[in-house]
Image (cartoon, rainbow, N blue to C red; front, side, top):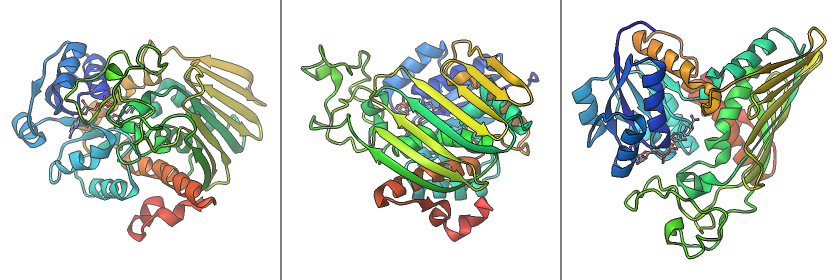
Length: 392
Ligand SMILES: NC(=O)c1ccc[n+]([C@@H]2O[C@H](COP(=O)([O-])OP(=O)(O)OC[C@H]3O[C@@H](n4cnc5c(N)ncnc54)[C@H](O)[C@@H]3O)[C@@H](O)[C@H]2O)c1
């Protein structure tokens, strides 16, 4: 990185916002300064300051922050359902943006984001951080080098706990469902690695464990079962935080998203496979992909940090990745470098563009439609005429 300092602003200073702030500072070696924060929640702001060891100026509105700071870049890390409204604040401006995934929570808003970005002057990169992680970069290199011969199929799986069912992610309205909120990463990486677009999707999605009859407002700290419940959250968020609560009861009535989901996906080059996720099996968090080709096999075990290749050309090879105790498989240094470059040169090609995120999210929307209509859904069914060129 050159030594030209950049000033950025944060919109949303919660779990992800504070991590972005720290990563930008650390991985740019101080060249990127967080100069302003907009977050309506007092406690998020205080925790973020404590966590990052810095106290950026806080603003009451996004507009006053942008007018005062004139930032070189902005990161939008608000809850999912607020991404479009945050992005619209930049109408007519020329400021590079990192937009958190998923683009938003429903197809109509996601399409509005695609349209907005098509007409926006500055680059917008989606925080599809896995694209920037060394393990994905290596997998892409091996696949592009043809180590597997003709790629034929894939199996992708991730299992984890119920964290999402404590917060805004637990309803379709505020989270979008886990095939959108969580699997957007996986679908994005799938399309990136396979170098293809999705063609059709089938899915079975069920809610088998979370949800129930507890009040929607019940929070762990005030629950009379909090001594025995295996899902109790020890560090609740503030009482006045009404948007991004993280200690809501996982057995509440309002929970309407699924907790066990499987899709069958066919890509436009004929490759097909499955993606499955389950959030209650008590498994340690796992994320694993396997790709089969006519001349080889590639297994990517994200949780173990291991990539295993078995190919006719190379025999068996394993590659180990040390994430340096970083989340997101240590993708943040690459994200920081790319954002710095985009702030320095607005004409640079975006590595994780909104268009690609949109196409990945079409798999999610198609999967939910397929699940409710009990049939395969063609991706083309979802795309409005003016967006067809996006898929061309
Ligand atoms: N790329 C990744 O791997 C990754 C990982 C985690 C979260 N995320 C995404 O980051 C976003 C934030 O998630 P999180 O886990 O930090 O949630 P969070 O609830 O911890 O933080 C969200 C913050 O936004 C604030 N907020 C509420 N209303 C706002 C508004 N109108 N404008 C700006 N901020 C507002 C909240 O007060 C809170 O501090 C989500 O879109 C999520 O999907 C991405």
